[in-house]
Length: 211
Image (cartoon, rainbow, N blue to C red; front, side, top):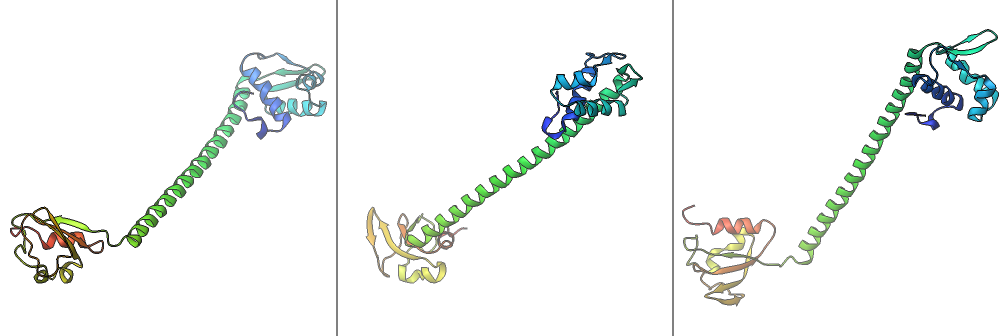
């Protein structure tokens, strides 16, 4: 049956729809005689009672009419079209509802997946910060930076930036734990540890003197 989900209808409705479709397709033109109930029952492999209910439904909708002692005849193409369209519209609404549910289900799955990835990202970030909090940052001091010519002790870097210098590369030589008397010069690279705000504060602290 074109356009109809059979499992949404009773058997006699399915038969009525199929006959109506045949009328719409001109297999049964206006005035054509519909087979007797026994023939309908045999054609669709149903009981005589089911066949009777199917033909009665078509008669109630004025798609066919009974002639005393003669049987049923096709009486209205328009009513057959309306009957078929009615169930097509029901199918369309059911399909739309199904599609909406499927889309919502898919979106919920995507949201769950995104939430899991976000939790994993936050967990990995926390693990990184927890496992390796002493991973040093670095900054090259360009000519014109503030505080050049000062010793590490004079800088009071921790008080101003929450960072601690752990090494200085000077003239290509790495000096680990340079101590408070090491003087910073242009071209030096400082290595320091601190929290997540330290890099911004250190950059601002050593910003160009003209900025």
